[in-house]
Length: 291
Image (cartoon, rainbow, N blue to C red; front, side, top):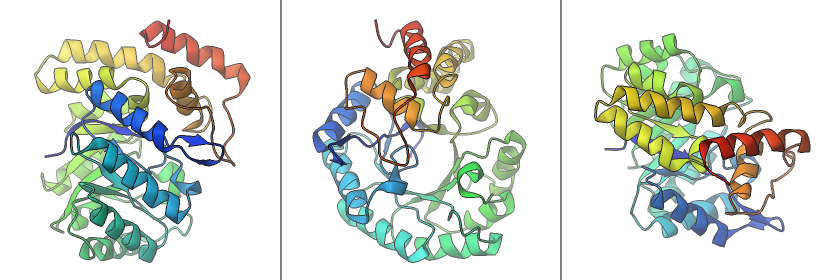
């Protein structure tokens, strides 16, 4: 079953197009450094500015590069139920292991609307589904009660919780009674969420420090709490600088700084401001990611 430190993968570009060779490099880097799963086309993957064709292409490229060595959790959410269904069907056909579905953004559905949206997507596929709650991005918060209703649907098996509210997370875990797994969607809360019952994290910082996040998870699972805490605070040095501008601006620049991809990012996002680059480099150097 899916658990552990999972990467919310950036999408590399070259001259305005998806960089397929860059995707291969990123996948190899992740697998070599112990990542437990790969999420293409999430928020960090700039899914909002990928065309429909590019979205499918990125998912196919990650599945091909991964070669079943770790699970692929395809980002297939949309603020359109019909489009989310089509993206999820494509991911299933392409060979994804799971799908990650964000709450519909901008149109701000009611709790009943959220329930019906995810129910319809679940009916359309045999893929196991992970819901994604990130109210700071979408403008809508999915309540623990709604998640509990959805957890009764057989192929809804998880929730990426980026609500930033541990009390709400605890209520969700309590109400769902083990029917689904909770994954941390806020890197700064990775260890605290593990402490109250989360089964892993879908992490931004994994893009540059997959070995560290994997070690944190492994030590936590093995009961080495003190070592897990040490690693958590090491990762904290990176988390302090990875949100100086809107995600994924800083982390994408940091991946570029590792020499894995170009620094290209798609408008309306822009390159990391020069004034922040020294801070990001300093944190990477302190953690030992660069010389």
